[in-house]
Image (cartoon, rainbow, N blue to C red; front, side, top):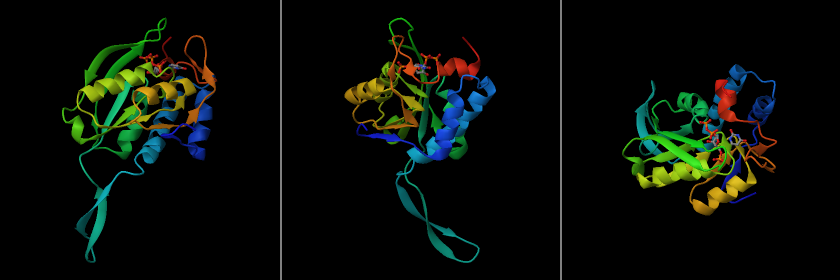
Length: 210
Ligand code: PRP
Ligand code: URA
């Protein structure tokens, strides 16, 4: 496996991913599963966040507990499909900030087209989780991370559901400092830049568009 890539092989994640890949899965089911997997991936991607001691009072006595150190995280979904991870992750990290990144992939050139960006201004002081279920050519992920870095982000992690080997290689070539968490690494990209075997177009399956 490529350096700096974590495949989350937890049975719950793998089971839900298989349900999502199934072409007969409804829009409602697809969206619910993406939300649930978002929650499970949030658990894994935050596993090594630094803790700091805090003194509290239990009903019996004072004690030193642990709390997450530093400022609240930023969740940065790439529109549209990245939004599918957001609610699940926010249910575990309700105080996280959110950066919306509007990018779509031109279907002919497969180049990233940027159309919206809104983030907290103090990105340099926060860990940023970039969210997108699909890492195919990685053109979208590379462009999103470039935008976040331009606005000061220094500590970034990329979270996806499916990755193509080509996308991982591209992302790590351009942004070797950004580790990746994914539920699976699939076989390859087809001639249209779709992940094979994949799950099709994540945004369309989430929102019932085509
Ligand atoms: C999909 C997906 C990623 C991108 C991945 O978005 O959600 O953002 O493609 O492909 P890449 O790694 O080759 O860039 P899409 O372009 O379909 O936009 P949409 O979600 O707004 O429909
Ligand atoms: N975007 C998707 O939604 N699916 C793919 O397989 C590739 C890019």
